Length: 59
Image (cartoon, rainbow, N blue to C red; front, side, top):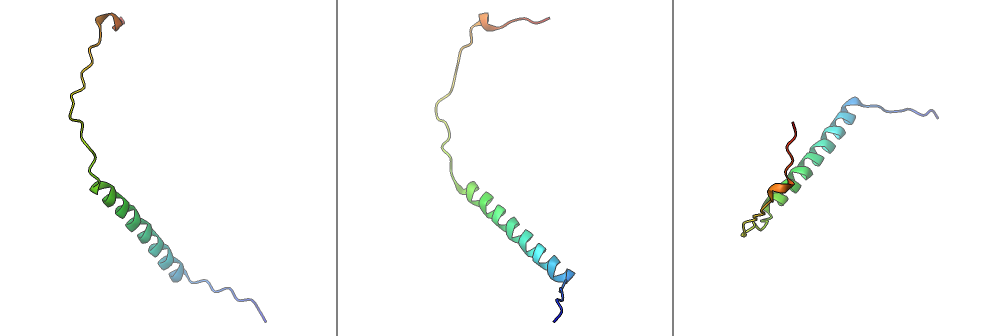
């Protein structure tokens, strides 16, 4: 009995295309679900006064 290796380029390409399409669909699904989450927006203005003594003039 001889060992015969069956190599089919078409089957390999179809499997690769299927896996890539599956990964692409999963990534799009994750992006879509993250887009649906409503993050709270800040409702308070952030204001910080920086004193002038912290600035240095570089020539």
